[in-house]
Each structure stands twice: as C-alpha cells, then as structure tokens.
Amino acid sequence: MKQFRPYHFPPLHQVRLANGTAPAAGSGAPTQEDWDSALAAGYRQGQQDGYDAGFEAARAEGYAAGQAEGLQRGLEEGRAQALAHLDQIGKPVDAALKALKKLKSDFKTAQRKEVVDLVGKIARQVIRAELALQPTQLLALVDEALAAMPPARDAIEVLMNPEELRRVSELDPKRARKWNLLADPSLAPGEIRVKAGDHEVDAGCQGRLAACMDQVRDALAATEEENQ
Image (cartoon, rainbow, N blue to C red; front, side):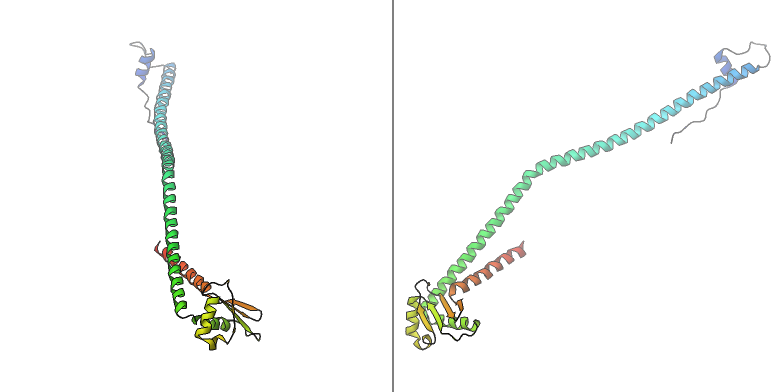
C-alpha cells in the first residue's frame, strides 16, 4: 500500500512573494484575486509534491518486488541447472553401478552352479560306488516304483543295464525271479525302467539325483536372497 505524507500549504505571503503578486508596501488587504491565485499556486505545488512522493514510493516498492522476484527466479533457474548437471554426471555412475551389480549377480550364479555341479558329481560317485558294492539295492528301487504304480495283472518287466542284471541275478536270484528282468544296453549303470501293463516308470538313480539337485539349487538361491 502506497504511503502519502500530509501536505501543508505554505503561508500566503510566501506564495505571493514566489509568484511576484505580493502587494506593495502600504497597500490594503488582499483581494479575491490574490486569494484565488495563492490557492491555485498551493494546489499545484501540493499536486506536484504528492506526485513526487507517490512516484518515489511506487518506485521503491516496485524495485523491492522486482528484486525479490528476480532473486527467486534466479534461484529456481540455478537449481534446475545444478540438477541437470548432476543428472549428467550421475549417468555414468549409475551405469557403472548397474554393471557392477550384474557382475556380482553373474558371479553368484556361476558360483552357485559350480556348487551344485560339485555336489552332483560327488553324489554320482557315491551312488556308483554303492551300487558296485551292493547292486541288489536296485531291486529296492523297483519295489518303490511298483508301490507308486497302479496294480497290474500283466507280467512286470524290469529293464536294467546288462552288467547290473547279471550281478543282481547272481547275488539275489530269489528276488530277481519275482519279476521279468530284461537287459537293455541303452541304459547306463544305475538306470532302471519298470513296465507294468500300460504304465512305465523311470526308477533309476539319475531321475532321483536330478530332483535332489533341483532342491539343492533352490535352497542355495533362497539363501542368497535372504542374505541380500
């Protein structure tokens, strides 16, 4: 809000002296014309002074408002430029962090695979050694497979590796005669296929080992997620 200072009209004799309308010495009382002239002069002077005071106040107020607005705009533009600059600087850093994170993930994946492969390799060696010492354990796998299959009236056929079939027949001929054991050269040691009617089941060691390795792999992955 603009501020105006009160104006006081100057004494009449000052106005008349300034305008050259002062009465001569010894003259009488001022005339109406003298009053009108003094009033007009005072009005003009007051109007000019009011204008000057109002203009100065408005100029000062406008300067302050413009300075504040300019400062605010400068701060916003400076902040925007700084953020843009930081964004440009941060892009290579973000890319490096992403690459490092991927490298870490790939390393953990490779490490987990090596662990699973090592466990599988050891397990296969243990199974191979166990079957070499006690091949009749394969017959227990046949029993488990038949227990999971629907009952069948047809003869049960058990396909085995020829060498393992020979050893099983020698070591436990009584149990071997329970089923129709057949040699299948395409089967690796430890692999068995059981046929009962229209049903056929893979009762070998590799399928069981693969299922175990899947559980080991899932367990390792879950452990890594918990540690992250």
